Image 1: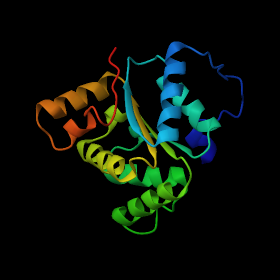
Image 2: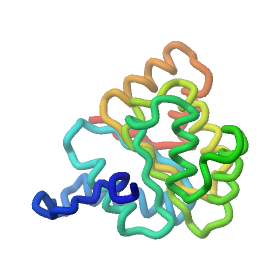
Image 3: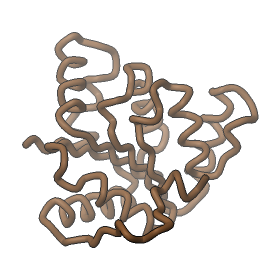
Length: 181
């Protein structure tokens, strides 16, 4: 199960080599900053530029770095369970509020944690509100880094334009930073 979740290839035939592109270096520096200082950031760019690869490599090689893929978590409950599973909290005991409380408690207890949220444009609105809540609860303690392509940018801009609860905070100058292609 772990091999499947981290994308491990048993054959090794399709192994990729990492190239230190500008995107790779930029994202790596931002991930280090988020982890060291417990801050939250966001990065949006075109698809296929290496965002996911960079984040997966950082999570694979880092300590207390947890990678979540929102394309696999279609709703808030799935996101909570995915977060709990990624960090090693039992996602089967208790209701969603209890599982989330345990996950947040654990993230506060370990040194310099970082949660990477990939494919964030695939998250539903209730998951965005949950992410905002997690950002607020873990500010200064746990870094959060949300990445996505144009879908993420569009979701946030639409949420702001429609004055949906929580979206303006996701794009506030004090929280994440969004790079636009």
